[in-house]
Image 1 (cartoon, rainbow, N blue to C red):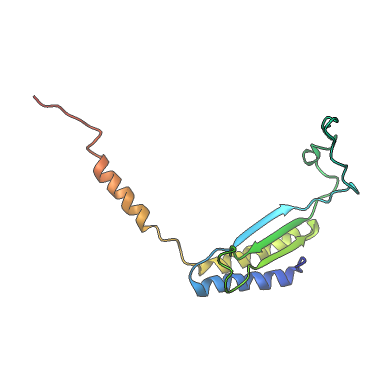
Image 2: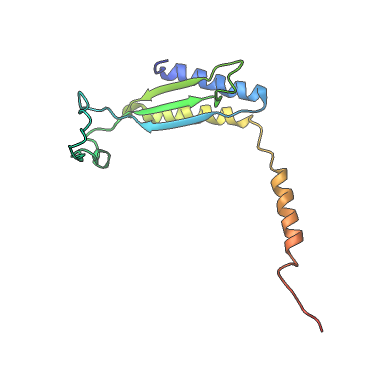
Length: 149
């Protein structure tokens, strides 16, 4: 599947969040990264056994700031792995945000994430609290040893 428009991305992202709400469990993964375009037309052939591997001059290309801002790739998935796909497929969404559209996109992205996460069930942490309480009870007097004669 190719990159979606911003409107399609937000509609399908809302659908992913809604499907997680109805099931009561699951994960939604959101990622973003800078989209770079490789300007070299063809890769160089791999070195032979006798040729030493030469370091390219552009190996530190990411450390040099670009002349113009780069677009950002935003991705979202429903977190289903291979074993979870018995009844449904993994949903993968992606869109490209140009630098001049970032502010408006992130405002809408934040609202979509907030509305999608408000109804999600919080993680059950009762086991963690019980184990901490047991450690406090058992470990409070164990460290202090008083010998009486």
